[in-house]
Length: 294
Ligand code: SF4
Ligand code: SF4
Image 1 (tube, rainbow, N blue to C red):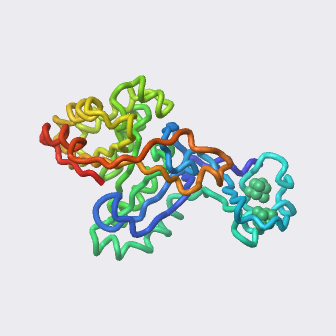
Image 2: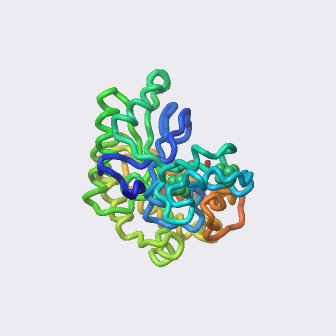
Image 3: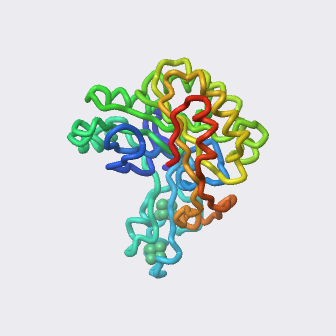
């Protein structure tokens, strides 16, 4: 059996659970990173979140060539990896790491409930991020229901790339949405993310009228989407959105922490880092939209 495959659609494939997060919603939060994303952004810093299945990360620099991994691997490291994790367990220097595990909503609940006292004292909660949570809507729905039974606030960070039916299911279940909007021009969006933004912008319109609080996040990528024209077009789209809390602008950083190397791949592109100032805030301020440069 290929254990890479998800055993059940209400199970999530989770590649990280990060406690004490201060930037993914109100209060202190636990951020749950879901594996799998339909976009291929040229600036992506989380390549380990792209594939929807567990996979092995391998650090050539840590490896001491002891051979333990090969001796336990069902295919002697020759065939298709089935993500059994045996090599990672056998490695004495943690040069191999299994990235991604399937979890039931109940198992996730057990893990995050450890932080419930912190959620209560800080008005925090749980944030689903990724990867793309929309790809695992059944899991997100079930996990959110379980979290809500314990009074835990749930936020989600999403690209908005899905059918309107799945997007509405997400809006129905969570308390707060962080909606990424990257590029308004569709041709440019396709070039830099690999997909059209037509569904994303359609879903943004749904979000604006849905009645849930939301925050728009824009990764600011020099020469890609930091032009006044792109920011003005976005601000124009957001001027009639009473439930929009604010826009957050996230400047591009070039380091992805060597994660592409661990996956034996290379970053799709690199961009020059840039210090942004009030010029990127102005299009939003001019439309009366609260905005922060993070
Ligand atoms: S031992 Fe490692 S490389 Fe071999 S199948 Fe299992 S996870 Fe993949
Ligand atoms: S077990 Fe670890 S250190 Fe030994 S050969 Fe495999 S990856 Fe390298």
